[in-house]
Length: 182
Figure 1 (tube, rainbow, N blue to C red):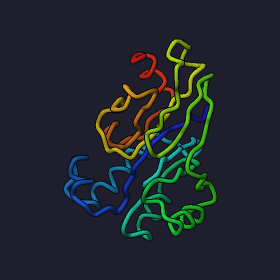
Figure 2: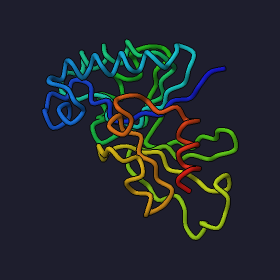
Figure 3: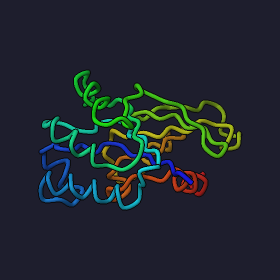
Figure 4: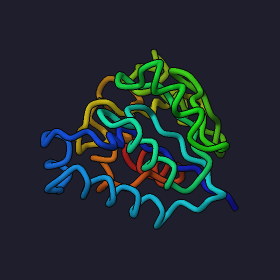
């Protein structure tokens, strides 16, 4: 059965130490290769991946080469580094990679998820409702280590690579973590 993965903030080719050093790497090249290796260890070509923005920065040609090497059908949500030029590049990397806009709602196993780059409040006065009747925001942007950084503001789960040791999150694992937290 095909699986669904969520990830944000690959930052391929972002040659700034404040990006790759906190992730445990000594160079951007080392980070790029580790992200690709980790991704392909768990994601098969038949799986679905939603990347919640900030795929690459600086060297777009090399960034596209990194993304091309990733397994799965990849849908990209726009982030703050996803310029119009990069969006065009994303749509031409490979036939099964596409930019799908600034946000997307998906349903999985009875749960509703609002996918966006930025943390977004998706609930209001519905804390008494069961999780399956609420909308959970999956986001990135903050480069936090804590997937529950904004939990006090609403049902917001961070999916940056930084929150999962540079691996994408399996959506089923996110559901289990949220059920434990809620």
